[in-house]
Length: 221
Image (cartoon, rainbow, N blue to C red; front, top):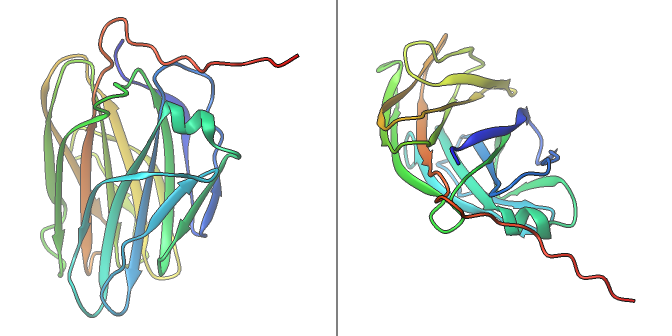
């Protein structure tokens, strides 16, 4: 069962984002968080309906002064099912962009495979070149954050733009693509105006044949 997108992507610029995940098998919720901070950077925490999400990869353009940071988080099918609501909550962060996308057909034991990240403290390189080598049936998710109110363009790489969210003085963009056969995947986001930026990319691994997570419903009479 190859990894496929389940619900359309959504994004916002506040610490909460409502995102409903449809029924499916071997689901994974992906949340990307971008931030610009004037004094270094902080590691955001992300939850979905009270369930803690797992950070997979992150990158920052620096350790002090103005920085642009990008993070990718995941939550497995059991966590989605256990969530008490469909609200994504982000804490411990400055100015932010928050992005969500759900997938199905993802291995529930080893959800993610290859990762990569890169950053710049100046106008170049633009795009920042991050890549992964994916397996058969995988999906690849890329995310980029910039410290300007800028427009994203992913056409120089192999993933397709899903969100382009502008905050007060920064912007973030999410992309993804599905691949039936293993290959090197470039997740290149070019910004219309870049001063500092970070990019991250991860692979979502296909569930093994016959692997299916099905919620158990217990009826008490």
